[in-house]
Length: 161
Image (cartoon, rainbow, N blue to C red; front, side):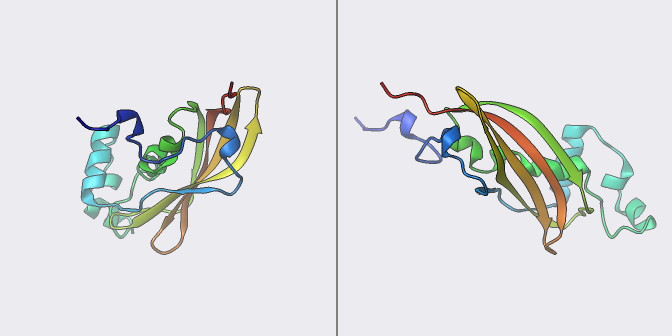
C-alpha cells in the first residue's frame, strides 16, 4: 500500500482565499513564440480565415513583415489557466466575472510574447471579494502589445470552528 492522497496532488501547496491577495502581486504566464502552429490552432478554434492572419504574401503586399496575429490570438495567452492563478484558488474561485482588453501594437508570426497578471484592485464583500487583475502582454522588443483587465469572484476564508 501507498500513502498517496489524490487531494494532496496539487500544483501549489497552499490554497488561497480573497484576503490572501495583495495589491501589486504578479502572476507570470509562460512566454510563447507565435509559431505557424499557434496561428493554425487559433484559426481552427476561431473559424477566422481572413488572409491577413494566414497568408504571408497577402501580409507582405500590405507592408507587414509576416502573418499578423488576430487580437484574440494574443489575448488568449492571458488566460489565467496558462499560469498558476487557478491552482491557488481551486477551492475559493466562484467565477470569472469580466474581461476587457486593448490591442496596442501588432504581433507577428515569430514574435515571442510574455503575458502576466497583476492584482490592481481588491473589493471585499461579506463572504466573497472581487480580485481585479491587470493583464499585460509584452513582446521580445519590450513593447507592451496588449493591456487589459480581468475580474474574479473569490471566496473569503471560511470561519474556523
